Structures are given as structure tokens and as C-alpha cells.
Image (tube, rainbow, N blue to C red):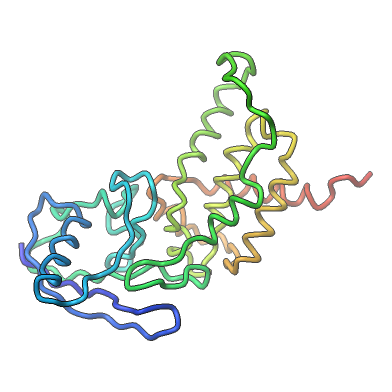
Length: 248
């Protein structure tokens, strides 16, 4: 299939960017990133600068393939990362717009690659359990209700890609932060530090310049791992509790 790509080209956060047009021939069995590989090979052969984009596992696990395709983070399919999007979902002759995630907290490094280390700093502020792990315990040493374990594991599915931030008109990271908090806070091992963890991670999120949540819900719709808004509700409850922790 023959495609016209309108790709955002930008040398860095301090420079202006623009869309540039490219023609590419792709096989419908290619992934979206493989199609970009083909384009870059052609550009290199022409002695032109290839398009910079982020990727790693290409298996929908790492969250690195963060780009907006035709106005949607990760592309038109729900619960799908960019690397798992295949060209069979496009038609011959289509024009495809590709741009980086847009957020104050995600400055452009180059072209389609953005700096998402703000999310790493949120995790470093409290996304852990302060306990010596030692050897692995037997599975039934700490009984956990199945419903609680499932909620924790659902939250743990977050890959930190930042699609929720890109989808939110406010640039909020509430879905990401709430997923990381719920993953630990719901488990007995994370109970002791629950309120302190929540306060630290929410505080760091605000320091990093992420916007405020206004319950639009676009984050849930565009999340490739189907993280739910109920995680934000639980996080807000714990955050308010942390404000009164220690008071009589």
C-alpha cells in the first residue's frame, strides 16, 4: 500500500517544529514501527536525516513507543501500543499524521521522541515498599483476598507510556500515578506506607508540571492497558487521608 506520512520534525524543545511529508510503500503485515523503519532506511539511502522515534521491546511492554497517530495516542485501536499497531488497519492512499506526545512535562528531544523521565521521578519519590525482601515467601504466607489481588494486578499492568498524559487536555498524569499507587497500596505489604507514599508521589507529580485532573476520562479511553478511573478515586481518598494523618 502507498501512504503519505505527515511526520513532525523538531530538533529539540527550544526549536520550532513542523510537519514534513513523506511517501512510503508498506506491507499490511508490517507493524507501524516497521513501516517507520522502512521509511528511515529510504531516507538514509538518500543521505537524508532519519526520523527519530523511541522504541525498545516492540512487544507492548516497555511503553517507549509513545507517539500520536492521527490525533490519538498510540493510534486508532483501543488497548494497543504503537508497536502492536499493524498497517492492515490503514488503507492504500491514506494520509497519516504522526507527532510526539504533547505535554509540558514531556519536552521534545527530537522529532517523535520526548523526555518522559518526569514519570520516573514520580516513581522514585515513593513507588516502592521499604522492606527487606529476603528470600521468597510461600505463596500463602500472607493471605490476600482474590478481589484485592486482582485490583492490584490490574493497576500493575500500567506500563508508564504516558498516553494518559497525551490524551488529557490538561496534561494530567493522574491515571499513571494512581495506577502505581494502587498497585502497592492495595496489598498488605504496602499498607504501612500507604498514606506517606500517596502524599509523596502526588506531590512529585505536581512538581513535575503535570496538569490537574478534571474527570474528562480521555486517559482511560486511550490507555493501552485499560487502567480504570476508579484508581484515581482511591488515590484521591488516600491523599485526603494523608493530609490529616497523625491528627486526633
